Every structure is written in structure tokens, then in C-alpha cells.
Length: 112
Length: 113
Image (tube, rainbow over all chains, first blue to last red; front, side, top):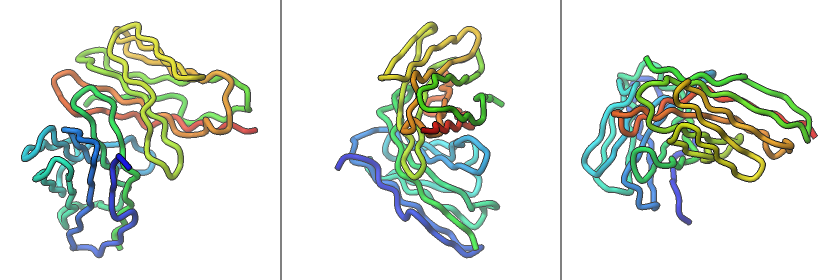
């Protein structure tokens, strides 16, 4: 099946621990994105990558890190520096700026 | 700070009713306007990407219009069906800020049979 796979779907983390969310795509898209959604808010961009080995900060990058070593993969690490990490995280891809965005099914992260 | 506003926040209609929502966005530095449908427990699904002032797009019973000069887009659903129940998101693409879409909070539509 072609698409975007996010894992895990649900994740619980203790305060002070880093956690990595996986995003893999087989759509051969150049661009990949990480968004965060909080209750009552729109999707907010954390990081995006237009090409392998390059990425840019979005609006709320503090406390997060990413890597883009392969075209297919764009993992997001939520570090202990992120003050309010409990949220729903969506990974997305597209062929490039201005094109339709395709989303994964999301990952729920809860800090306990 | 760029802001995208969607109204209404939520909408309850009867099956067969036609409805419409609004997306307001900055009228400067426009690049593209996206509409997505997000059903519960599923991924957001693209409906339309519009780039030209005056654009009108249609997909089945759903259509959208775009006015970039005044900064708004309308989404219309003709003859709403229960399966149209979802949150409808719009997103504004900023010229010069490649890859960064600014999303609205969405309009949640509930269609009662």
C-alpha cells in the first residue's frame, strides 16, 4: 500500500524522557512535515524538510528535533526541553511547496 | 503573526440541507489555499488546492471558491449527507515561505439523518 505510516499510534512518556515518533512514506515525495494539534487549535508546523539532509524550523520548533537521512523517513524527537509535549502529532508529505499535502494517521503522545 | 479564521466553528444540519463555510486569510503574500476534510479517527484528506483569484473547484457535491484580493474562500456542500460529517480545514500558503501552511481551526460539520 502506498502511503504514510506513523508509529506508534499511542505513546506514554515520563517527564524528562526523550521520545521519537516515526514517519515513513513510500510516495516518493520530496517534502515532509510534522504538525502538532492541541485542543481548540489549528495544526501548527513543527519542522519541515524539502529535501534529504535539509530541514527548517516551523512555528513551534523549540523542544523538538528532526533528521532527514533518507527520503522515506522523517523522525521527530520530542525532547525533555519541550514543556508541553502532550498532544496529537501528524506527519505529512507532498511533492513540494504548493502541492496537495498527504497526512499520516497521527500519533498521540501523553506525558505522565 | 499570520492568522487564518474559519467560521462557523461548528455546524449542525439535517440530511439534505445545503451548507457553506468561510475561510478568511491574509490578502497579501498569497500563494495557495488548501481545503481538507478530516473525519474522526482518519487522516485529513485533501479536497482542493486553489491558487488563482476567482478559482472555483468542484468535487461531487462539494465546491469551493476563492477571492485572494479580499482574502476569503467559501466551501459549499450541496445536499449534505451523514457521511459528510467531519471537520473541514482550510490552510493558507504563504508566498516566500515554502512549505509553511497556516491552518485554521476548522469547521466541524454534523449531518443528522
